Length: 366
Image 1 (cartoon, helix red, strand yellow):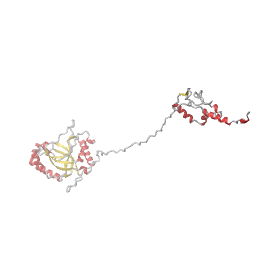
Image 2 (cartoon, rainbow, N blue to C red):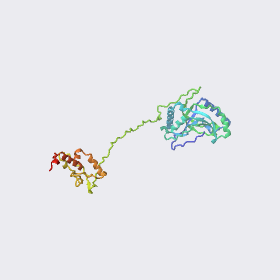
Image 3 (cartoon, helix red, strand yellow):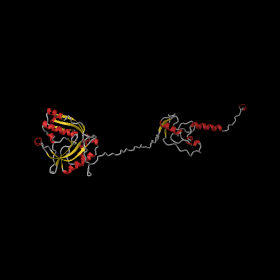
């Protein structure tokens, strides 16, 4: 299969083209059957562009790099392989298929773990300033540019290909010389590659009768970082209830002067002044502790005593509050605010307590 050439950077004569691919491991049943059937298909139907390459699965497209950059890519690939488990490096061969577009005959392959590794390669420091293009790793190309009839005939050659997991080699090539179909037909010369390294990728499968091949390990100079997720502890703020003191508003009654109409027709003004301090009047006569204020003067009363200004007024509004205040004051202050009736009863008691003169009997009168 012919790969498009990657753009070459200017003023870099020391650069060369490189290619990374997967190939069936040597001496495996898959590699032996593919080699023999490709030779038979070539004799029967002639050559096409796929004969310029060995049977492979493209991992990347062509890319330009210097020799130093290629060494860094080699170390990065080895490190990526070392970080994987054998199960993640598994490759499964599925079945032969024909594609109408461009007349392809392919073998479908599934290698998700290696595909993920190829996607991580361009993000490594060793791949900086390189135009790496990861491939899909979904098929092997067996023929190209064939008609529908020839596609069916070519597919018959590869019916005996063993399906299932198969060992693959990860190969890093340097392109030395390009060829074409005409040159290959005349001289049998495909593209010429120089193999930089080969890593044998074995999944969980075990192939009987295949000698184990020494696997390359990462060198001590490998700088490929091992990417591990950073786990940070989740810090949750401690929420404590804020206890605020309950501030109850201080309710102060504002007493305004109120005009009160008495039964006698006189109008008195209720004083908003606080009650008098009568704590020092304990030894004074009761009659001398009259209530002072506008309500105590000229107030209608039974007898000579004083009467509170709210006597006979409707117990509503400010008058009602003053009445309650009067009833709740201490006894010493309440005594100084005796009503007219109380004083009248007091005087009656005093009169009754006086000694009475015995009147003459009516029969002794002349």
